[in-house]
Image 1: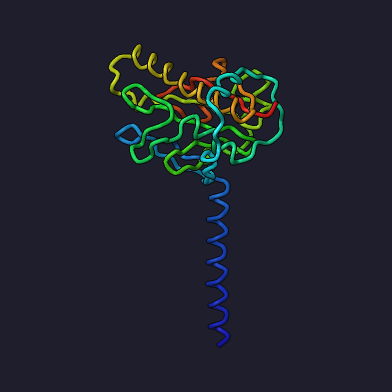
Image 2: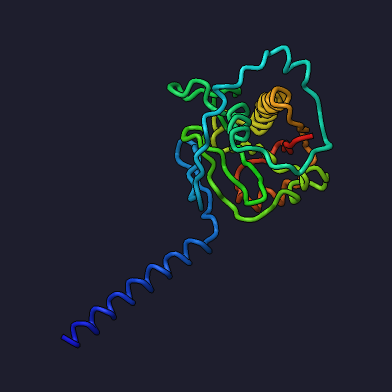
Length: 235
C-alpha cells in the first residue's frame, strides 16, 4: 500500500511539473516567423487571439457629416478607446462588407487584397483578422513610439500600421506596377480610417514618415512594405 501511494505521488508531481513547464514555455515564447501560403495569404502563429464585438452594425452617421468632419488631428489624448470602437475602426479600414464573397470595404487592384493591418497598443502588436473578426497578438510589449519619431504615436492609445504584402501581388510582373498599386490601395484604406474617425469623433493623421526598417524587423516582414501609419485617439 505504501509503495502504491509513493508511486501515485511521483506520477502526480511529474504531470504537474510537465504542465508548469509547458505553461512557462507558452507564456515566454516569441512570435513564430510569419509565413505565406502558396496563394499569398499569410499564416501566423499568434500568441493570443481576441475576438472583436460586431459593433459597426449600430453606427449610422450620415455620410455627408463624415465628409464635412474629416480632418487631420495630431493633438491626441492618452485616453483608452473602447474595444467596440476599435472593432469598428478596423472593420471600416479593411473589414469584409461582403463576407460571403470575401470582399472588403476598401478596393484593391485586381482584388489581390495585399494589405495586412496591424494594431499597435500598450499591450502589444496585433494582426487584424477580418475573416474571424479578431485581433491576433503577434509581439508583446508597447512598441507604439517605435513607429515614428512623431510624438503623437507615443501618446495615442492605438495606431494602425498598413503593410503591403508583396507575396500576394504576383499578378504584377514589374516592381513599378506593384509599388504603384500598393500605394493607390493604401490611399483607399487611409481614407476609410479618416472617415470613420470623423464619424466617431476620434482624431487621426496619416503618416508616411515612419521607421520602416524598425517596423519590418518587429513584424518580420520579408517581402513587403509598411506604407502608412495612423495614430488614433480622443482629442
